Image (cartoon, rainbow, N blue to C red; front, side):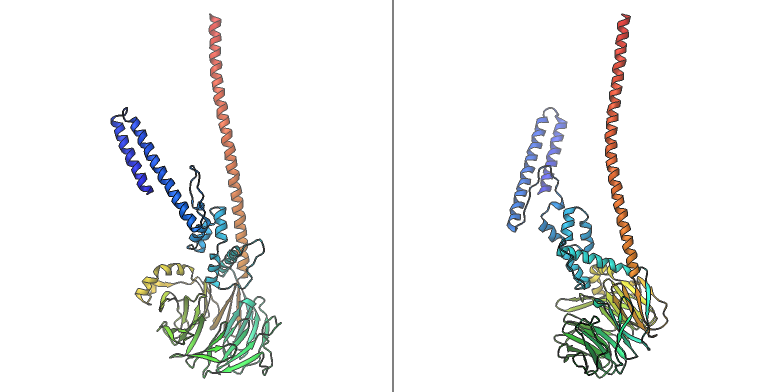
Length: 551
């Protein structure tokens, strides 16, 4: 409507101008009348539009403020409820850019509820408390928590130090990091489960020999379980009042604090826990789902090869057996998706994002694949990216947004940032689905960083905040400590803020000085003009006087 009015005014003006060129004296009054008529039409249409907008806003309960005729409308003049709805479609970077426009948009963007969704999508429920005090709103604290976690994720590209933990007498087969309590659990061929302090790198406790090789360990704040090659699951329950949660040196016959269950007929290779269930995978080609309270087996998921790894999420569980990857429904026990031959050779390792949409696999050929899972009516899986950072088998994977960390038999650790790939995968998902799962060598992505220098096999890796924990064939547990990089990055950010503040202060002073100088220049120009006028008048007066004297 506005374009039609503008077009009508332009046509009317052009016609009237042509007539004026032909008859300038006769058509001058007609031109003014046409312009006034068209202006009146535009003003009437604009007022009608404003009245309709105010009526529609009043129906939905959104206030509408009418601006003055000289007011220039902008995005910030929209109702706050409408702006908040628009912010729902922005990503964290877009919200940050919008918050820099003015104070009102900064307040709306900082206190928006979508920051909580952003945090849950990447890292799940926060370990620390969210409430920052009475001066902050809940949404504002979620933004601060998100920014802090995003800031900490940059540390893996900085400096690090290595803490070496000695205690195991043989190879370390499994490492588990309980980041919420800053604890590390390790075990291996020496049949002993050991507990370490993640920050200090000190040994806390160790269990008695459990009678066989321990290939898998899993823990949360209520339960610690270990899987042996004899097919049993040995567990420790949390001890009230114990700052380290579990008493690994408890008496073997104390059933209140320690238990052991038998069902598998082959070595247990992988374990996992959630709120109500335990999961165990074995070389007997089965995964068993256990009830945590009664310790009874609920479901048996049968595979056609040795089970190497498993990752549960919500009501589904991902597993690897042989060279294939499987997705199961834990409620019904049915297989809902399968990827046959995902790697050349066995698929040893598996990791999954917190949302369950991303699945990572590591294979015997040294490659790593990232798959995207879309669950609508059917469970569709397509490959998003491939990395080949290792020359040996990838035995372990760990994922904490945005970093994927892998450990291999070549003695190297690779660090992969998946943020850029997630942006491109949203646009290319339909293309990849139509092409299938095959990816040529051109689509292989390079890792962001490699940690190497260890000749022995690395069997397991874990992530905890700004630390990477790894165990290998030499029986040593190593902790890569990136806290120094975090401190350096914090100093850099503070210096950057100081420089920005000084730059803004200098710019403000320059604007003030330029304003004063322009006023001074105007005064000096006016003074010069007065002086020149005075000189001219004086010269004229002198001539008049001289003329009178001569007369």
